[in-house]
Image 1 (cartoon, rainbow, N blue to C red):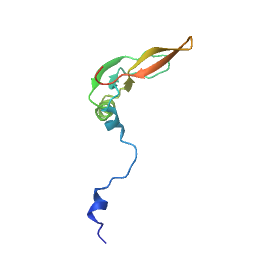
Image 2: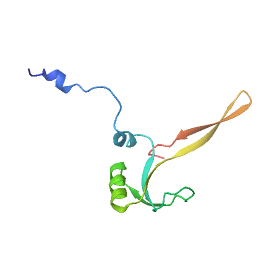
Image 3: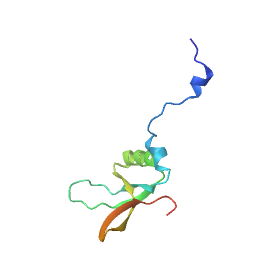
Image 4: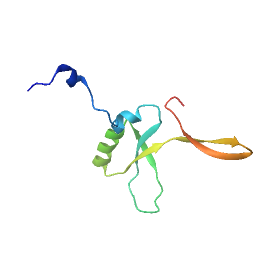
Length: 94
């Protein structure tokens, strides 16, 4: 039994895939790192990738870890004589 045309065009509501969410307003970087993931190792970012998909493939090919980096900025909010520190995620325009 064929579905009506209007039902075919409707999309189910839900969460967007990670790739499309990252291209929105928030600033997220995907970088390949140096090998070595043992506890206590320093994180060394070597090469930035265009997206998570590319980072995953290159990580698999090279046997090196990849990192997802989010960029935040702290700000002070003064309210009733007290100071509260909040964080804002920076947008792609920043």
